[in-house]
Image (cartoon, rainbow, N blue to C red):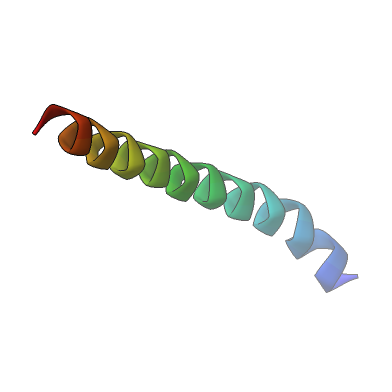
Length: 39
C-alpha cells in the first residue's frame, strides 16, 4: 500500500521532469538550427 501512495506523487514529478527536459532539448535544437542557417 505504501507503493500505491508514493506512485501518484512520483509519476507527475517524472512527467514534469520529462516535459522540462523535452522543452530544453527543443530549445537547444532550435538554437542550433538558427545558428546553422544564420551563419
